[in-house]
Length: 335
Image (cartoon, rainbow, N blue to C red; front, side):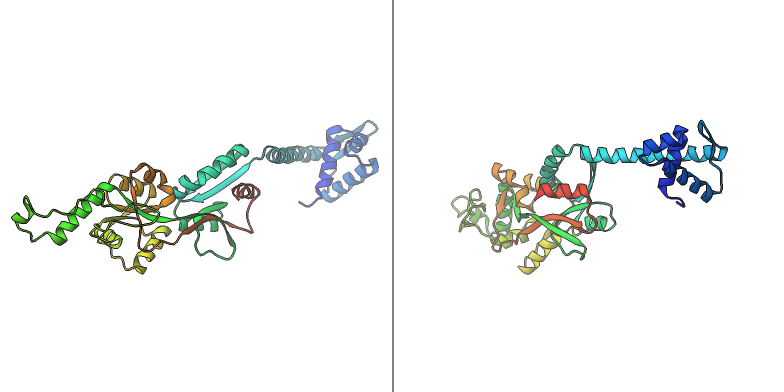
């Protein structure tokens, strides 16, 4: 803009009132200052904007053209200022969050509930994607913050820890009954004669009651024919797909302890993993905190491992050089 905005404001007020003195009063400046500003504007534009008389000032055709455009411009400025005041007074704004489906359901929702209750005028949008995609959206400035499991990040991104989670393996009591029956029979009884399996023969160990329980002391019955490692190797092992950071974490654990699963079923959603485990499809690797209600109700049981799976940290990630006011307000109530 070639002219100082203040000159245009003075011209606009003089044109609206049709009087230099009144314009000066409205703007809280002197009459000579108004006259000088208008004269300078006319000189700069090379146009006569007012016809002056003892009764006041009247716009020329050029002045009318400038006034019409300034009327629209100043109306937009006033609207913008009023909007900003409303945003401040009502706590309005926009919050864009990237998160995986499972972390959204089991972690984010409770924090969102509190935030929305305190900030009902904020527009919240959620992008549900795996961690790697969430980080890419953050880099592209398409989200304000991401909720992820801790991983290596670029220098500009800050990770704010929120809570710990623990991976575990679960299945149903019935699935383990059948697994032990099937695999024990295959390993120990394939060459038994009919007489050995008939009346009076020593039966297989009774299966019900010999399963692994999530007891605090992590003890198991000495009658179980398989170790926990063997159960994972002999079962239908259900894991998240390889594009998920949680899967990579569990793959590293499996490799470290030389577990060699015979069959893996990949699922792209942890909720489905939990549901499939609950109907007896196999042994699923899930987050313990997400299946607490299933374990308490007896829908699934937890398999205690010989080697504990290291805990992971869930937290919010954001660009500390580009974090907005609304996102900061959200982070404040989560910590």
